[in-house]
Length: 116
Ligand code: AMP
Ligand code: ZN
Image 1 (cartoon, helix red, strand yellow):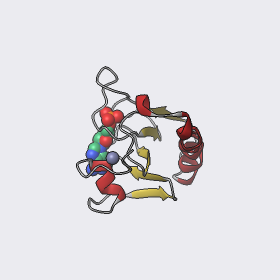
Image 2 (image 1 turned 90 degrees about the horizontal axis):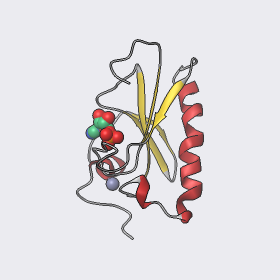
Image 3 (image 1 turned 60 degrees about the horizontal axis):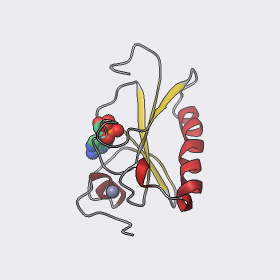
Image 4 (image 1 turned 30 degrees about the horizontal axis):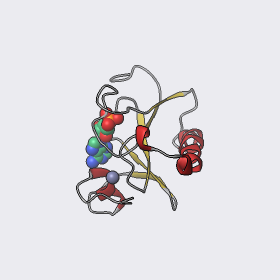
């Protein structure tokens, strides 16, 4: 299993080859602000390891997936979101996934939003 894909834009962000506005980082996860936000606060939480889609996860990834979800409310609190937020994972072609490196959108802040 490859842990990084040289052609993947989010792997390049993990490697520091492309800039991103980071919101959180630890050994296994990175969170950064979406370049085209739908909401006043719109971050993407990703595993540092390259996993293309949610359909590619294995039981060994369960703890990492739990960490992604558990980070969302802590991050929203840190970023001043106090009135709720949305979490979204697009998977595959019919799921309208555009970037094939697993990521969870976390969106919050006062409405109206640009989308979503
Ligand atoms: P999805 O449709 O779930 O694959 O969404 C991919 C998201 O990645 C979109 O919301 C894009 O705006 C966002 N995105 C793409 N490239 C970058 C980048 N270089 N930095 C931050 N966000 C990005
Ligand atoms: Zn990747």
